[in-house]
Image (cartoon, rainbow, N blue to C red; front, side):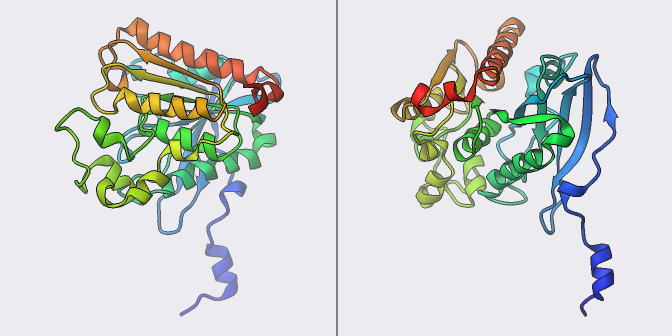
Length: 306
């Protein structure tokens, strides 16, 4: 039985763009945190939220980092930049805010909830929400950099290649699902297995769904409009072969985009095997890249100037 119009209107979920913002917390000196702002409410699903880290007293509209967590698209949390950063005080997000950035760290639907392209749809929706509330939040979304690790790097790359941003920072992410099995260590990857992380992402084994695998691969979306990329990948990565990072770098260079690809010697996945000093250097290198992109006029990062 349909609800009366007045009751239906009363019970309808409000649009996320019109929901009140969470109250600000101050978890670290010089920072504000708006924790758990709802940016999307997919029907029949949990609300999707983001945490927004901000400098405490910004002097001008802020450049924005959109951060996307890893976890094989199946696990993970927006509060986490990876296991090597969990002991950091202040947290890596607070450090980025202290450096003058706004940082939006996102939820997205995991593979137990939906298959691709739901994940890309979600992070794209988050950027639209941030754009819609930019004035209210003091953001300059024209200076947005995407950043992710592992599965989050895959989504950060896709987001950068399918929307207009200043650049992308990708840590040890998969970039071509069609070549991943062959590039993996012998005997470690079965492309016909329906339970691999990638199969769960696209809803089928890679071997039986090559078109889906290609559509979910960042390399497929590289064009001459691609923004600058920083790609960091460990030489000893046992989960995502370094050849995946190299493959995206090659595709970007062939398209005429600027790309800084760096092997990280001795690093396994999630920076396992690195010293604390070397992990700090990966973070600092990435921060410096984001700072350079967001302090350079847009014309200098256009396709003609790369």
